[in-house]
Image (cartoon, rainbow, N blue to C red; front, side, top):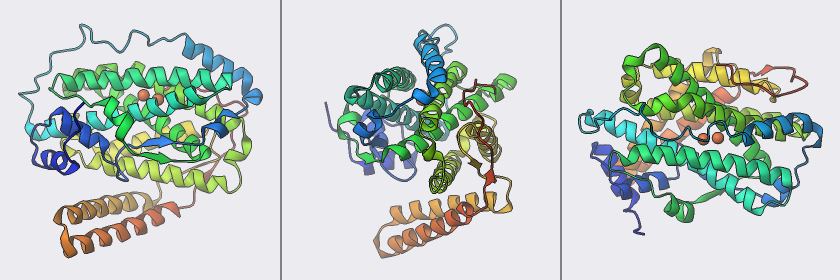
Length: 367
Ligand SMILES: [Fe+2]
Ligand SMILES: [Fe+2]
């Protein structure tokens, strides 16, 4: 296995719109910044002590559904997989789309690595079974995206990532908040694109979008599992933990907004306005998260959009400073970081909306 080229090479290639090779793609996937998908590790022993007795009925229903494996044969190319004209694709769009695929593949694989590790270390039969089923799905998702990338002559080296990418430690409760949200927002993202392209098929510039409906049902189910895990221990969603929930909601939503705005051509090709897309995804995610979180963010507050736009400008400043280097680059980068902190605080401090959490959390994908 060859080590990938340095991050700088990969960054350079993506900056100039040059086609990436697999080594560079793997380097892009290796990057750890605030905005790129990370790999996580946690206190697996503490997670193994989870007790789902209080949500047993819902738990058994969900596990039975996952075990029935409705998407067993879904992640295969069939006659619906139209030929993709990678060479005919406008280079700047191709660059953004490949960046989207690499980032999605890394995010899917990040779930796979975490879930597999939990399954490997666990002794609690409920925990082992759930994480086995979720790792199965995420491996399919990551593999399917990698198949799509391979047609463009690129593959993310997943084995290399497993061994060499940095792992960020999160204590179990932060894993629940972050992973629950990433599963539910993943569902909302996939289904919003799918429904939009169902109505406007002329924008479907790649066949992978046809696979999104069944795909997002997997993510929905994973989110259900984390909702039940959190409900099995009510203090996770009470008291000072509500502030943590608000923090994760704010961080996940704003990261998505900034990242999506880094791909204007990709969204244009899909016929999607990234502001509309962001708000639609946040609305759906907020509606779903009422199943377990006692608060949602007020995304209609005047400070919300203003703050997101400020964060986006700050991220451009930080990236520009990094690229520039030297003292002036560092000054620019630090200025950008201070701006980002200011806008983050300004949206974090918007009063949240409070909700009664329903007696049972189990939901079906409804969008
Ligand atoms: Fe997934
Ligand atoms: Fe998932």
